[in-house]
Length: 363
Image (cartoon, rainbow, N blue to C red):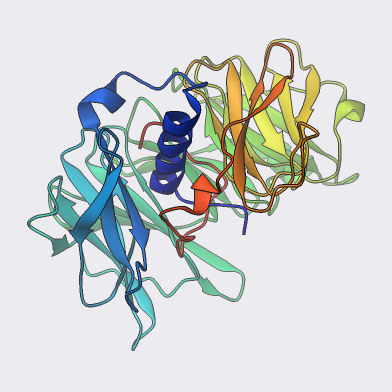
């Protein structure tokens, strides 16, 4: 798989940038945080969580349990860590929390996720956690748990979701349409209902939802019901200002568009067709091909000036890459720089049960 979890990619970036002199500008709070969490086997038959110290470049055991521990994800306020525990006997995931130091580990709610790699995300205020479970038969559900009450507060059908960056509001792809869930109010609002009934649907590729940074607009990949051609659309949360961000769809590289991410400055959307990396200008709809040969994580640099991605190939034209390495492509001129030369992406970790294209910074 070319997709990895948030904490793992951040670790890769720090290892790579330390080794290569630092081409990407990291957020200021990395210096304050100094440690990153990731899951690994480390020679043990059960997966455990380790802590990587950025300053000393050393790794240590952070948490070990009875089952397979995976997908550690720090809360935005840095006070808690959510992680998954896989029960091999009964074959389900459960959600657990621990304090920032790895102490006071406890299960959150009693939700058992019979799924192939659940998706877990914190709300912006560190109060709620949303999880996607896919028990099979083309079904998908989203569980929303309140960390202050230790209870599941909502259970809805839906395949894809993204938290608002500014409110406890969830954008959900459900039944091919788009619905906003206000979690504290327990209300829902369907967007572009007529358009989704007659013209568009949100299709099956993963990570086809995102938000503009101000939390007022949802961005999504929609497919035309007649032509099946995909494009990137946006709509405001009050169900106004629906627009196609790529008016000239002949610019699109292929039928498939997935893995979309809005840039931190809100000016661009990146996406891929499984192999090629493209960027769309939100203001002008211009499509630019930036790189090919993608087989690893893709993430915006915090300054929106470049994108880091993983590949087994060398898109710079250099010698064949023997291991999975990280590369950086500059948005201004498309110049690609190789960041690692020693398989740093695989130095400390192996892919976790929940694999992802999108990996946000910081984590």
